Image (tube, rainbow, N blue to C red; front, side, top):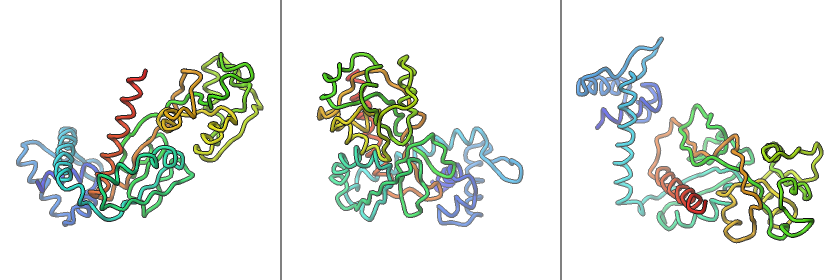
Length: 296
């Protein structure tokens, strides 16, 4: 087991010294455990690459299976003691996801882990994962965080959403071009609207009447109040859609250039609290995705 943990740490962190730091042992101990693993497996685990060492292709594939197995063992232990997990879990999320989705579900996490104190902060920068005192980030981007461990949550597909009160005024919303009868609500940039209109065969006006917001929650609040039409997604805006506060007048969707990811510092060993929240969030997102498939 010590050898397998050394392999897993080396595969994730990329260096012997980083693996040793995570495991709390010396570098020579990590090297010894990897050498011992080679004898047990009967194939080479490490090979030279420039001035350093890397896993052989076969060892790399084996390390992926080892990581899955170690995760299963950890989860099994957690399942038997999860209510005893305590301490503080610090989470940073994009402002929109935090206020429109996470805050509507966090109570179920607390019900499972009543002894764990959760601190949630929001960041105005969608792909910011720089804060050192944060255990987990819920970030929006293209997945390019090279110094971090990532878990992909879901890709975003945008479509127009509006208050039901707009459906039957100013001639209604029958064809895609009809959205131009109303103010278009934006999150910082206009590219999502321009891409959706282009896909629908509608020319994007150079000076479209509308409002730009810094936070997706502000965009949704304005849309619910009938102040215009927003470009939103069916996961983040699920609460407003379920409550009938928002409707989607058209079914055409565009895929965003980014997605939501759960991001953590690769050098930090995942704590029981981090693993518990990761499993809870992934399970909840999977339920939402399954609900979307059943409706379509």
